[in-house]
Length: 339
Figure (tube, rainbow, N blue to C red):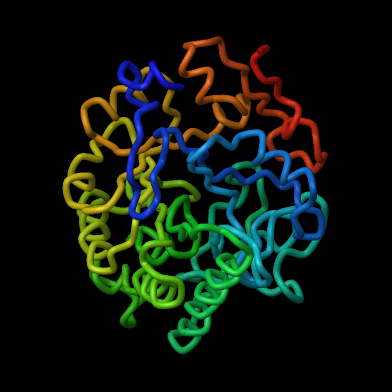
């Protein structure tokens, strides 16, 4: 990519903590549902290898940290050594479309609340959640700690804690979900307590230089909204500074600016949310972000950095094959540019 870097902001280098990145194009974490029996297969190696570049940054699909954290079938389980980490909470299903139990013994998924997601939302029959008892929370925090250790032992460079898109951590942070009256509910400090306890446990286990966190304060995905998302985002950015984690990865909402979070957080600031080449270059050029994560574009274009360098035509993502369990279709079969 030499010779193009000065002209294309996305192709300029960036130092993210101890990592020297050759460009600013990141593979966003994408649920792909291709891991049979919750174990990664050889096609996963090919999928990520196709999208790898020298000193590039790839974030793997989310992995479950316990048996109560499964949301989809054919996703990864990180109770043994795996990659990134998530906990789905009330957005889990007891039964998937394949009628496989996603909760042990058909139990209710755990959440910050006993309020369920509206039946039929996204065409699914959501299972009513069970409010986690206060005394259970330390064990869940420990699940994240162990999962982080397993990831590092498996050879990953770090972990991204999933605090976005309606998963368990976000169910605690957002006031339109969290209706608790204990020390984990009410004020911003209380609602964010669980998230920060997870961060502290993971940082203490593997080191802050190996930890990032994904946040979506402006999202109301799976009905996980907040009455003051800007204040929530700034609170979390300030709190995460205290742990010295290497980055935060924030989902944008075009109706709101992420600049207050950007100005608050001291580490690398990654943005995601349907960016294309033009607006990705723009946010880097105007220093609104350090890195840009691409989801569907990188999925459909395994050589995305090369295509951005040449301003070449892009493959279109086939939405109908996003979550097939087929190991190839819509996974490793998207074409590269001809030499």
